[in-house]
Image (cartoon, rainbow, N blue to C red; front, side):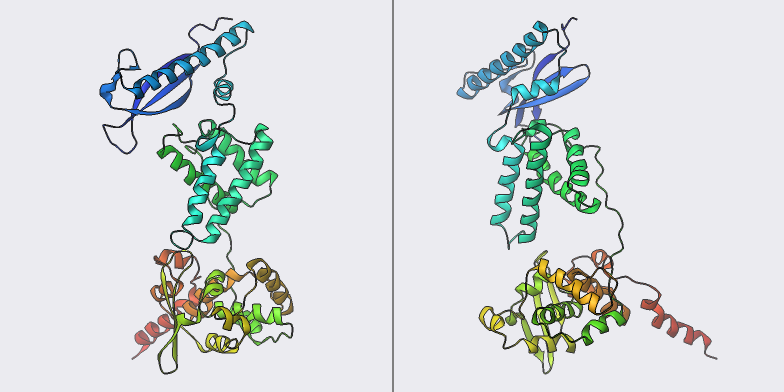
Length: 407
C-alpha cells in the first residue's frame, strides 16, 4: 500500500481573532484523506516576516531562528511517524500522530491544567465577579473531566489540541450515563466547559471549536412552588426540635422576602433598616448577581428576625438568623414537608418561587416590582419564578367586567 501524498504538511499564517491585522499566528496544518489537524506554533509574526511562496519565516531575529528550529523539529517528528507507518505497512492516523506529537501535555497546554488555572482566577474574584458556588461548580467539572480522561484515555491529562467534538460528546455521554447526572445539570456543566474552551480558542491554544455542532439544550421541568394552603401549613406548624424550627423559620423568611439561601446566610443585620416608623426594609446586593434588592419586610418576616435578635450566633456574627449548611437545610426540609403533609419536593429554592408566585404575583404586586425585590436585572428571569395564571389577572378582569355591566 502506497503512502505517497497521503499525509501533507503545511505551515501558514492566520490573523488573530481580535481582528488585529498586524498580529498573525503561525500554524501547522496536517491533512490526510479529507481530515485536518492544526497545530499552533505558539508564535506570532508580522506578515512581512513570512515568505508566502516558501511558507516559511524570513528574517534574522532570534524569534525567527527559534521558530525555524521549532518547525524543523516538528517536521522531523512527523516524517519519523510517516516512516514508521511505511515500515510496518500501517495507514496514517491523524489522532495517533497527534498523540505522538503531544503524548501528555504539561503546563497551560493541557486541558485540566488550563481549566485549573481558570478556576484559580475565579477563586481570586469570589465576592467581586463570581460567587463561591460558581467556583465550586467549576471544580466539580474539573474532577469529572479528570475521571473521564483517566477512564477514556488511561492518562492523567490531555492536550488542549486533542480536545475535539468526539471528546466533548464523549464527556457529555459520560456525565449522563456513567456518573448518572440529570440532563439539565449535565447541560450546565457542559456550558461551563464551553466557556473555558472559548478562552483557549481566544488564546490560540485550540484552532477549531470542538463545540461546533454540539447542541446544549435544557429540558423544561416543572418548577414547584407552594400554594397558600401549603405555606400556611408550614407557618402554623410548631416544632420542638431546634434544628427543624430554625430551618422552618429560614424557609418562611425566604418565602416572604424572595431571598436565596446564600443571601440569607450572609445577610447582616445592618442591612435591615427602619425607613419610617414601623416600616423595615432590606437593602441587599444578591450574592449571585450583585443586583441590588430592595425588600420591604412583611410582618411575618420581621417577626422571624425579632425572634432571633438575641441568638448567640446572631450576636457574634451580626447576621439576621442562624443557619446550617445548604445540604442539611434541604434534608431537614424533607422532614418538614412530611410532617406538614406536603407531597412536593421541598427544597430551599422552592421558597424563592413561592415568594414570586403565591406571596407576590397572586396578590397583585407588579412583575417589575417583584423583579426588583428578587434582584433580577431582567423581568424575563422573574417570569421563570412567578407562575402567572388566571388568578393573577382575575381581580383586574372583574373590574373591567363590572365597568361594562353597569347600566
